Image (cartoon, rainbow, N blue to C red; front, side):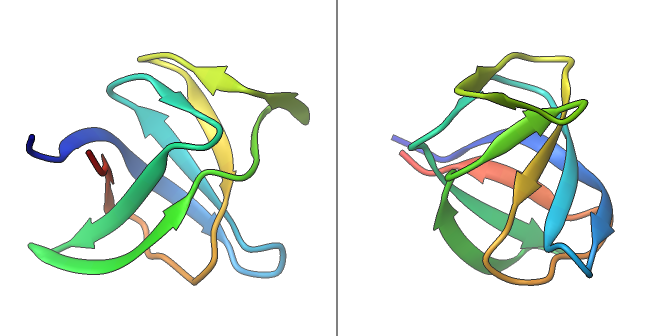
Length: 84
């Protein structure tokens, strides 16, 4: 199965290591994702923590904007793909 796009990074808070992601698909804690920018894979990680308005979520759906703790710095505009 191919990886599929689940969102795009709208902002990154470098002090706390959190990316703000606008979702195009569903995402859940435990999913493996990768960040891609300019067609280049940046890094992969598991979704450990997701929040909306400081409330922790186990899953989020298309259209939501979530804060996602990241293992590395990621730039605005990076695309988020769920790894299958």
